[in-house]
Structure formats: C-alpha cells, structure tokens
Amino acid sequence: MTKDQQPTTTLWSGRFDTAPDAAAFEFGASFRFDRRLFEDDVTGSLAWARALAKAGALSADEARQIAGALTAMLERGRAEASFIDGPDEDVHSFVERLLVEKLGDAGRRLHTGRSRNEQVSLDLRLYLRRRTPALQRAVAGVVDALAAQAAAAGDALMPSFTHFRPAQPVLVAHFFLSHAAPLRRDFARLAAARDEADALPLGSGAIAGTAYAIDVNALAADLGFARIVDNSMDASSDRDFAATFLYACAMTMVHLSRMAEDFIIFCGDEHRFFELSDALSTGSSMMPQKKNPDPLELVRGKAGRAIGHLMALLTTIKGLPTGYNKDLQEDKEAVFGAEDTLAGCLAVVRSVVNGLTLNRAATASAASGLLLATDVADYLVGRGVPFRRAHEIVGALVRTLHQAGRDFESMTFDEWRAASELFEPDVVARVRPGASVEAKRTPQSTAPGAVAARLADVRQWLASL
Ligand code: ARG
Image (tube, rainbow, N blue to C red; front, side):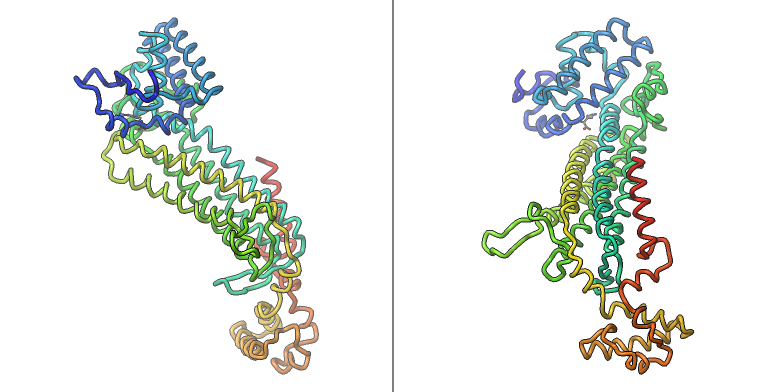
C-alpha cells in the first residue's frame, strides 16, 4: 500500500457497507501530525500486550510474537523516520496495520479490551512525560545564561523603570536575575504539568472501563506511571493535562517575550545599555546603519502563537459533552506547536543573552541624576522628618533642579541647606547611585549582598538539576 492510497479497510469498516469518502477520510486523518506519538504508541501497546497476557486474554506465544514485532517496529521507526508513514488514519491504525500484516490473527488480538480513546490519551501522556524535561533543561539553560551575565556585571549600576520612567538605581546583576526568577517558576510549572500527565488512562476502555481482568496498577508500574486515572468517563475526554502543559508553555513564552522587549529597548540607540552580538542581529536591505534585533522580535511575536495554542485547546474542550469526541484530535497540533515554538525560542534567547555585552558607562550614567530623589527623601526621614513631608521637600527641590536642567550631584552644600536645615555634609556621599543600592536592606532587594546571595541561590539551583 503506498501512502497516497486510502486503506481499503479501516479500524471500523465492519460496520459500514461503503468505503469512506476520500476527502472526508483525509479531513479526519491525523497521521500527518500524530506520527510524533509513534514511539509512545508502540511503548503503550507493548505494555498492553503484557497486561492482556497476564489477564489470560492472549496466549504466552501470541504475547511473545506481538512483543517481538512491536519491538522490531520501534527500532525501525527510531532508525528511519520515513518508515512512519502510510495511508493510515492515525498512528494507532498504522501500528496495528503493520502488526496484522506481520502476524495475522495474533496482531488482531492486540486491541482486545482497549479503545483508541484511551490509547490516544495514553500516548499523549507518555509523550509529554518524555518530552517536557527537555523543555525544562532549556529553561534552565536561559537561567544559566542570565546568571553568567549577572556574575559578569559585578557592581555595575543601571536605572530601573516604573511606568517606563527612570525609577531607582539597581545593580545590573539584579536586572538579569529579575528575568531568572520567572523562568524558575516556569520550570516548576512545567514539572507540575508533567506530573499531571503522569496518570495511566488504560483500563478505561472506550468510556465505561474494560471487561478484561487487567491489573491496571501493575500496568501503571510497568509504564512508570505514578497513578491511575480516577474515572473512565472523565478519562476518555480529559485533556486538562494538555491544557496545563500549554499554559506552562504560554507563560514561559510571555516571560521570554517580556525579556526580549527589555533587550530590544536596552540595546537600542536611545539606551545603549547592552550591545547585541552581531551574529544575533540582522541588517537592513536599505538602511546601512541598521542593526536590528530580529531574533528577539520573533520571540516576542511567537508568544502570540503559544497563547493561541492554549486558547485553542480551552475553546475546543469547553463545550464537549462527557466522553471522547473527535474534537479532541485538535489537542495534538496545539501541544506540538507550543513545544516547538518554546524550544526554538529558548534556544535563541539563551544565545542572545550569552552574546550581550554590557556598556558600563551608559548604564552608570543613566543610573544617576534625579532618580536618586527617593534616597534624598530617605535621608530626611533619617533626620526625623515624616516621609510625606520629606517627599514634599524633595519634590520641590526636583522641580527647581529639573527646570534648571540639573541634578542632585551638581548641588553645593549651601544649596542643600537652602532646601532643608537638616542636610549635613554627608548628604553628598549618601546621594549616589552606589550608596542608593547599598542602603537597601531586604533579601529581595538590589543591595549587593542580597543580590550575591540570590545569585548563589540560582547557581545552587542550577547545580541541583
Ligand atoms: N486520532 C484520534 C485522536 O487524535 C484518535 C482517537 C480516535 N478515537 C475515535 N473514537 N475516533 O483523537
């Protein structure tokens, strides 16, 4: 049978007196994309054959034949991707057709007591359990790159922003670690998604369970599942685990997108805080001066896709009546699409972060000036002034300086005294970006000791993985 031929029999042809409409068959087929589940489908079938034999539904000889044929198929499929191809409706039909072609009736016994409804759920759960750790490792790879930049930045200062207006000085290291923190949450979210997928659906049958004495706990142990599902009716249409995975991917993409946006801005001519490596920038076909951050823009753009995959699946499942419905076939392209998008973005973001060069002069000069106003107010609070009153005094001072195009560092001591009698000569040393970060006291702050401790924690976490 060549791949452009429609199979003359389907898994359900006994019920019908005509062959399926070619276009409708093609429309309903999922083999084009669910071939990615080949390994999982065979793994699941190997375990199912063992369970059937234990239940007395297969003879020991048939079970041996099935195991041999499936193992050979798995090896061939792993070695030769083009082998996983044919006119079949889906990967389950493909595997079964090959088995029957090879073994005849022994192959025809494999589907005893089993439904594709539970099989497809099993395959997707096995797939996510197998593939999610690679995404987690890639997330950790970006965290590693951010930690390396944080370490390299040392005591370099930069401005932080609120409302995208300069706010307070921070360590450049603190900024890098501010992007590591959400990625560590994403890592945990992916782990939780993997755990949610880690339940055996086999034994659910098409919806009501199975009439064969399958020891599902032994089968779960055989396939390495942490537990079995609670309810066969729920299991036949539960795709919560896929949605949880898509949420973890979408959230990670949101974080990568926001990081990309920060670097697009901070590498731009207006800031020049960092320089993008040439290898990860693009030029313009017309404007010779341009150095564009295309990879970062694409990461930002692709976040839309990942969010879209989550929305698509939630929308697909929201109106389904209990039990398997073919709508659920839409889950796979969402899962694979989100996985591919995230994997690609994590790799490129890691390279971009590794390739950044810090422009210390630019970040230091931008970290100074009127964004020290909070430190001036804190100085007065230290002299007993209520904070609201200090805020007013400093606000008036900022207004005067701003109008004159000046900042605190240009002020003479007489000028400080004119603003308030409470200023002493030490105000000059205290109102500096370096002093501002050193004055912070909390563990999550930009104080150099706190940042060093957080960096050590990130490194310890990376080493523990
Ligand atoms: N290709 C199908 C899917 O992805 C497999 C399950 C088919 N089950 C069925 N009753 N038609 O959902």
